[in-house]
Amino acid sequence: MTATNKLSSPGRSAVVIAGHGSRDPDALREFEALVELVRERAGQRIVRHGYLEFAAPTIADAAAACVAEGATEVAVVPGVLLGARHAKNDMPAELLALARAYPQVDFHFGAPMDLHPLLLQLAQQRVVEAEAQSEEIIHRQDACLVLVGRGTTDPDANGEVAKLARMLQEGMGFGGVKVCFSGTATPLVREGLSQAAGQGWQRLVVLPFFLFDGVLVKRIYAAADELVQREPGVEVLKASYLGVHAHVADVMLERAAEAVEGRAAMNCSLCKYRVQIVGFEQQVGEPQRAHHLQVRDLSAREQAVPVALQTTPYVPHPIEAESMRIIDAGRDWRVFPPEHLTVLQRLVHTSGDFAAADELYFSAGAVQAGMKAILRCKRVVTDVTMVQTGLKRAVLEQLGVQTWCGVHDPETHLMAQNLGMTRSAAGIRRAWQKFGNDMVLAIGDAPTAITEAVRLIREHGWRPQLVIGLPVGFVGTRESKDELRRCLQVPRITNSGTRGGSPWAATVVNALMIDAIAWLVEQERQAEGAG
Image (cartoon, rainbow, N blue to C red; front, side, top):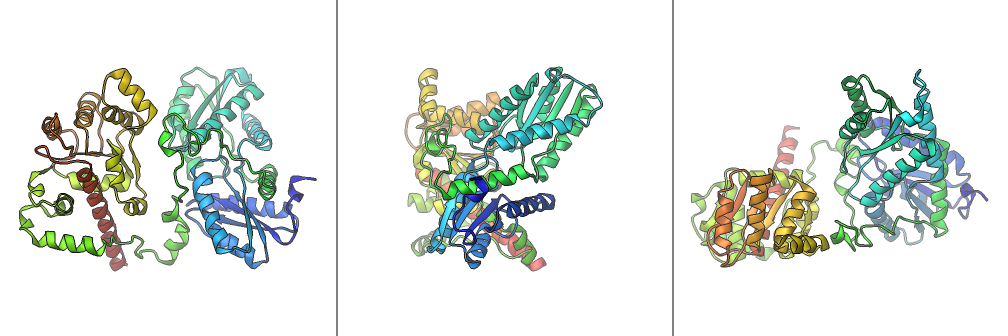
């Protein structure tokens, strides 16, 4: 029995192909052409498609259509190549919501396509087709395969790209192979192409490991064209992405059959959500939450209501609101710049002391820099978990901000032991290595964390978007804050004296996020008025 005939109850079973979605109409056209090919090969089963992000219909829309057509069993198959965040978090979250909405229907979740033998054969075909474009006959030992993956925050998925590259190199006899990524992971495409060209190969074959055309594939080909201009002595062949092909359709149907039969196998042995992977230890057991809600069905929403409000204003608890009213009336705030008031008043709320506002120091433009960084970088790094815990969870989720604290990670402990530094300072060094400049750094406990941050800023060119330094204590606390105040290279918020602590640092970040929400709401209101 073939994979395409294994689903039970023909006519009452359905397959939903869950695509990522794209702003590029070429990508959507090709995805929908593939869905039609799946439908042609699926016999009597209902076949629908939905998108996770950017485009319509949504996955929920597709499932609803299947139920309306009488389906009592639905296999949701990720239309993605590898198992990373979308297949491990976002799509399962959609499936759980569907199971609650339609308790009478059996929903099954399929595995991503992964390195299926049919996809390896299709990759091989794309390479051979690219080689046929050239009039030059070159031994593959003199050529390098440049495999370009999507790039994710999941090292297991990125590792699968490297595995595919090795299999194609050894299977097809290339003299070398270079793996690079279109984003998130490194090396990026231009860097990878330059490195491969510098190794002296006569030919580079650039193979995008992508299902469809789109913005990223177009960028890959543009980078290859740029390399031709820079390195005219190297032949560069652009292989096609996988595209609409019977092999892809058959893999999707096979994954649907596996899902119904309970044989869907995810890449769990090295999954960062299940086991401790070096550098990702803090994500073990992370709750399964969708991260795509802000861009779900985005194109349809933009067409229907181009300037309508999308951001929910921050609404404080009644007790919090009353406290802020009392604080606002409790002293003359006109002596402070208006952009500082949210931070100052919330710090008074946290400390219970109006004098806390007089101690705070803001470098020029620090509040604006912090707000912009929160909206752009969407990452807050803390020195201790108490600061991390003090951040408002609902506000973090609304803005899509990720938090990270490395103080308890095994690598931090090893670094602290071997370099003779505190764990908090080692965690700051790891943040520098791990994230570079794209973060807001909030220090609320350890003076040594400030000292290490300032050293990295001055001696190694680190440029966090904002440094908040508000530790509490008597040993080195005043000195570290004074040192941060004198660190002119970065925006900074600190205070004088020994007061402070994790709640203070968390409060400053919360205030910046609340201001960021208010700014977004105001921008949308202005756009609505202009429209």
